[in-house]
Length: 210
Image (cartoon, rainbow, N blue to C red; front, side):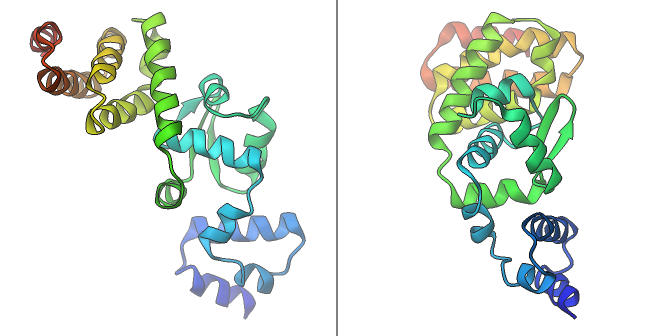
């Protein structure tokens, strides 16, 4: 009966059931106690500072997949791997070794409850500078989910100059990797940002790439 109540309370959502039971097992609580602790806010509030930092870094990059080295830079944790292992065991993150992503529903919960503006700005600067240093390298194309997510965010929040820099830096790697949909989207964002910012050179570049 307790398990049935837990499943009903979670509307049969598989990920939420797995997360609730995993946390109960880890903390030595009964299913009945787990059923009484189902508020997503309570789950997020119960995170350690290290867990919160790692999840914030992932959420700021759009939920991933994010490479381990980048996630290390995006969080304030000295060593993210043990924290990620704990989060993966509780089904809060998924491993795509050596990359990680948030469990899909968690991205929505974090965006609704946490202020991600500063973490996203930090992620944008990190990926912008890293892409410029590694222009054309295959590793840049591997980070396309984070790059495109941050590119969209930069354009949507009026950071047109940074959107142009990020899009231009990502362009050669996306093209070389044959990621034509991502490449086209990046070019269109750069074009729109360049026009808003009155950057004629960047506008001409984007029209050429288009």
